[in-house]
Amino acid sequence: MQIIKKVVAAVLLVSSIFASAGVYAQQTADPQKVFNYAEALFDAKQYQKAVEAYMQVIYLCPKNDLGDKAQYKIAESLFANSDRYQAIDEWKRLIEKYPGSELAIKAKEHIKLAEIVIQDENPPEKSVEDQVCRKYITFGWDYLNRSCKSGSYGVVYNVCELNKGTYWLDKVIKEYPKSPLAAEAQYNRGEALILQSNPADFEKATVEYQKTVDIYPTSIYAKKAAIKIGDVFRDNIRNKKKAVEAYQKVVDMYKGDPNNYFSAYAQTQIDFLK
Image (cartoon, rainbow, N blue to C red; front, side, top):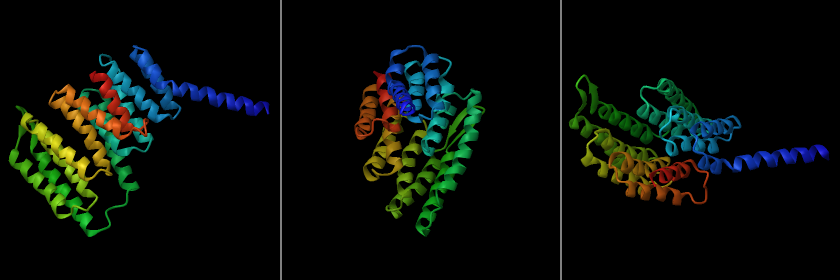
């Protein structure tokens, strides 16, 4: 009986520590302490809470030297929590935000490994239609990647290549609207417009992302698109009000699941922008 009481007491103690994660991260202004706390949560395999704490390091304490490490560990936490696609997105975010960091090199390696894991976990497209859609999307990205190239004089944009890329994405959307890959193609329509870094296309990109949310609401790409709308308003259009509104929609979408990654990410952006 004494042993059981001790075990119960230990469990309650650990639970109370984890429950105070958000409060701790918000109350302390020391990014190193928040980072150490996040590391403790990660070691305890409390990955979702760790993600929230790492986000605090990045967004509530932006001027510190731990940004790249926290960004890297967000991806690590998501991957460990089986959120493979979100992990890849966060590693890509690290490469974009901290290109000179040593962790950017590791992030590139981990993206390749994560993609292999995803291929092993997800069976290949079985239907002929889905195989065709996958080919079309691949063709599309071949052109899209050629639509902006870095050279000695900067980035060179090629609208002709962009149009060829979107042509293949549109074939998936129009010819195979019921394919699960149609959502991916629609999401990539928004990505294609952002790729050109043309301010005139940023609003159009949010429209394409919104179509993903409206037409394919149960798809993982709908969730990614909802977040991306806020990111575009924040980073590209620089409209803080619309960014907050977009992120708030994501929070409202997951009111029944406050520990959801997308909800946690969106709420952190709202706190930072306000």
